[in-house]
Amino acid sequence: MPENLSTETTETTENTETAEAPDIKFTDFGLDGRILAALSDVGYEKPSPIQAATIPALLEGRDVVGLAQTGTGKTAAFAVPALSRMAELADLNGPAKFTQILVLAPTRELALQVAEAFTSYAKHIDNFTVLPVYGGSAYGPQLAGLRRGAQVVVGTPGRVIDHLSKGSLDLSNLQYLVLDEADEMLRMGFAEDVEQILAETPEDKQVALFSATMPGAIRRIAQKYLKNPAEITVKGKTSTGTNTRQRFLQVMGPHKLDAMTRILEVEDFDGIIAFVRTKMATEDLADKLRSRGFQAAAINGDIPQQQRERTIEGLRDGKFDILVATDVAARGLDVERISLVVNYDIPHDTESYVHRIGRTGRAGRSGDAILFITPREKYLLRSIEKATRQPVEQMHLPSSDAVNALRLNKFADRITETIATEDVSVFRDLIANYEDEHNVPAAEIAAALAVMAQNGNPILVKDIPVAPAGQKERAAGRKDGFGSRGPTRTLTEGNATYRIAVGRRQRVMPGSIVGAIANEGGLSSAQIGGIDIRADHTLVELPAELSKDQWRALSKTRIGGELIHLELDKGRKPAGSRGSGDFKKPFKKREGEGGGFRKDRGHDGGFRASEHDAADRKPRHKKSADAGTFQRREKW
Image (cartoon, rainbow, N blue to C red; front, side, top):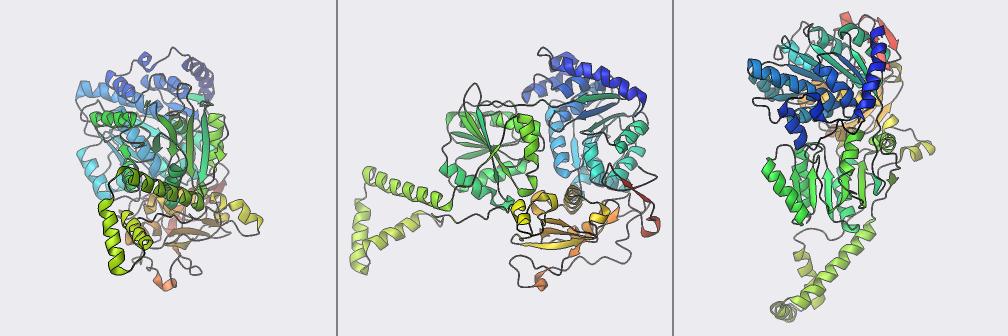
């Protein structure tokens, strides 16, 4: 690292200490009034330490290297000053029709989250467009958005390079570039992609690089592409109140709804907020809860402000009990009757988790917070406990016997209440006549009426499959099929085992595999099951019925520079199938496909314009201790 970077560390440490002073507010930075109004709308008043140290430097036009753990408020730290400067330029020169801000993120989920945050902070800027671009989604909407003109583009490296190679993304007028979670991008094998994108941007752009760690590769990219950057180092000091009881439930993704239903039936709560990651998920979960008899409503960034206020008033007045929300939509929400926060989807960072559970246990009141995690997400618990400085205790799903006993008691109570309050004479005569005419006991008739009253919904529940415990599997001598991501290789219904041609010899990590398959194949993280990393290959659990587009994309996917050569593992059958013949065959590659692409060769289906064909893939690799994979010597 250049000497000037270490010099800046002392300076910015002083800024960090100042940022923690209680009298510093966003209004002290000289931000554009429209940005301040948006920050007020989402409930922001005082900046976090990383924001207090970073925003002034970025507003001055300086490049920045931000070293901070996930969950310290980095998104607002780079988005707020960028939008403020863009708004001021628009007032002088009129609205821009070209891309001014580019944010690179390692995963599609993070790209969507950052894009949503930009949209929220820029809600009062006229003619503003933010466009997320990532692998696995259709090109049409992205191409249309780029043609219309998007001032802010947030994307994963592979898809950004793809648009650059197609000519659909023009960075010639780029003014502001952000590398978010730079160390994670490096770990996932995007090193060459990131450097190629940087090389195609203007020299006079402003660059903000944010990373939790500073491996050698990140230092080299900062030295090569950033000009006299200020290095800002901030340690997260997030904590939460001790009057909020925190618990986690380990549950497989497809069973989250059943698990939440059982918890709501057995435990006694008043108002509830359930947090999910996406706007679409708010409506989906709210609909499913309503279909199960719960009073639920959704709130997200697409809902107009007036409707949002009416929804919150409905929760406050008891018109419904469950609010399903995204992080941004629930910022600053304070409803006294909220006694439970359910993290239906685990948040991307610890700051979001703290903000979420902060909606309960307020003003000295007690509250509960329940976190749903899949086996592969369990490693995030340590970060959460460190951030909140409190243990998160494991809870167990209410048993089927307990839920069924409760349901039967409630049904019996409804019978008692109906007999006491309703006129049942008509039905009494109907049952008596039916009993005489058909010679059927009254108890059988009553049972049939009870079934009719259920409208096809079963009154009793069945056992939910328990998320396997990886440690117990290993203790029993069985191989841990998930590597660091969880339990062994019991297939989920509708899934199959696939083989990819990279393994321990290529030093691949579970995160690299998940990132590549999710981003390039258009799969959600919930669709990726067990991962068994072996010496020269890896077995991965994925949906048995992959589409042709998914096969095409995954056939060109690389991890650590190596083609994965996805194929079905012929030794395993998909759960619920009769044989390997039940599979759809892999998408047949056209002649010439599968060897990669040169940078100057156009292609429609690929996600890595930076890939090279076999002739260019000479064994010129060195082992990188920073990335945990192989990088090209001339690149990193």
